[in-house]
Image 1 (spheres, one colour):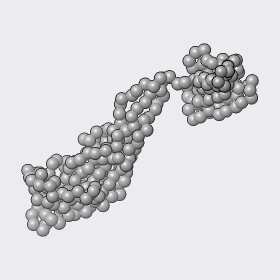
Image 2: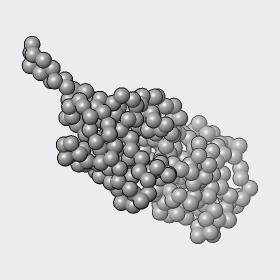
Image 3: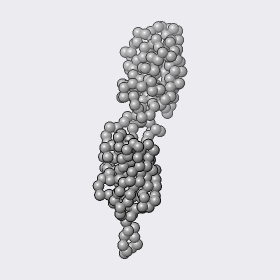
Image 4: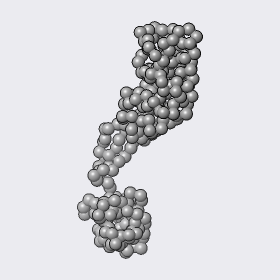
Length: 278
């Protein structure tokens, strides 16, 4: 993941529209310590910290429906990757200072225009990210002093700015929850008296030739109750007494069908309905 973020940032500076001074410079992700001595103009992006972006945290688990089962997956972990961006020149004296400052200024201006990072730059594991990676440029979080940072690297302080990119780490772990509930029974009554059952039933309307969900109208003929399916072709009827019913289903471009059903269901997927093209 993080090496793919490096490749994504590399692609940003290889864009044909990037200022020439950046396009001609080398882009490095090495640690800029006392042994770091690039032999040409170099923009260094040093990844030094990875923390959860709590502002973008989503506490709600994701539920998916596959092969007749509901599954739960943890939401993506939003990780803020902090880079220290520095410019390096192989020249000396005033020319060295001027080139390094020019690199930083051009890089700062180019990166500020990329929030979030456009999809054409994504590489590797970043392709297909559930969220476009947002960026923060030149915003030192919490006013952290850099003195100890430069001291740890063993070099004198130098001009720099921070780049923070938040990526999503998607968990592959899934926890099965069980099949879709198609019949739900509620029993009501007064204390000491008999209980009366009311049922909720549900199913899915699909195209018989493609298994694609359909927008359909479903009517319980015996009760005259009608409802529309949701975008996934699902429907629900509540407050039904036990017994035999007929579901009349109609969809544009498909032949209407009457489906006899029993409440409660005798088998799973008893309320799914397949329509043939008209």
